[in-house]
Length: 109
Image 1 (cartoon, rainbow, N blue to C red):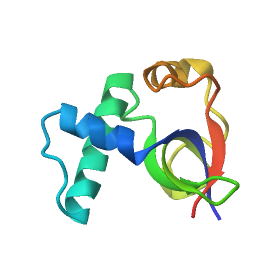
Image 2 (image 1 turned 45 degrees about the vertical axis):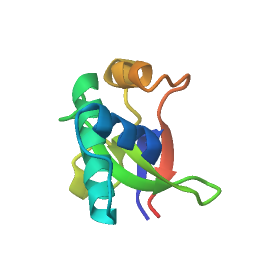
Image 3 (image 1 turned 135 degrees about the vertical axis):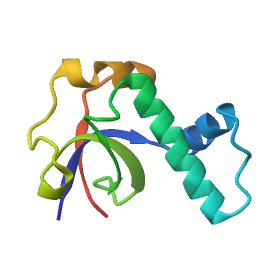
């Protein structure tokens, strides 16, 4: 089981971001997935983490599934550091997402 260290992002925020970018509201499940991805890429781009982070599906300790913008992972295929990121690495995303805490570790579903 792999783990990721990052920030959880709700579907609603990602969909809203995609619509603000000019994408049409989703009509199908495929449209929704595309809009979620476009919203995430926009957020990651604005935070300057497109090259240093990954967009992954994770679950909380209570089993709830979310999207995560991850800075660290124990999955060698992701080519991310295995240790938690420094504040310098995540500060812009933290501010953009209005989070009050550093990135957390989550398991894959």
